[in-house]
Length: 177
Image (cartoon, rainbow, N blue to C red; front, top):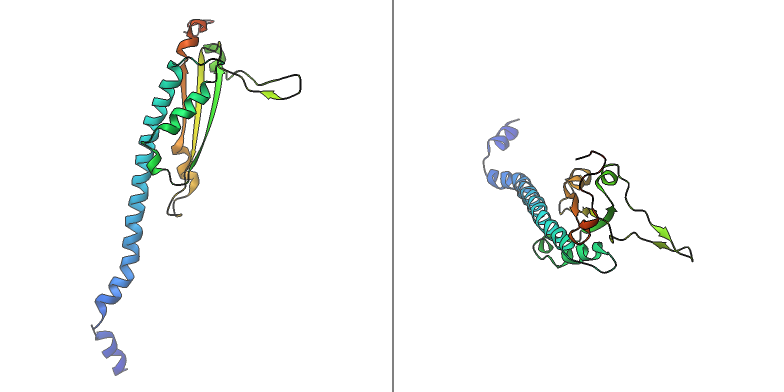
């Protein structure tokens, strides 16, 4: 009993034990702060890159109407968000609508089949409106943050009037405006 009391009252090595017990939590806290800062910064840079890509796609004339290719190329050229992209991938989906009523009722142009049965994606030719959907698949450094919490942060949808196709866009249709 006397030896146990002496062991409990002995203060030698206490700071080493306290340090060994608290430093992992401190490092975890710092890495979580770093991860949240990375998420915030990447979200802001993606907003900027997506707005620039949408601006480029809507203002440029494309023979054949493949505006998604312009959007994707501009997004891949943007270096502002690429330095924070560590293994993440993204999906881009472009849908074209002929008028505002079709856009509001989600009636976009559908793919067609050629004579051989191959699917031909719809183009933006003669379509006044385009909807660009962007989804970034984020990979965190710290697996403590669930993916289902982070994935909605990196989903964006942009609706633009295609400048070179807007002469065909009816601004007033069926009393919607």
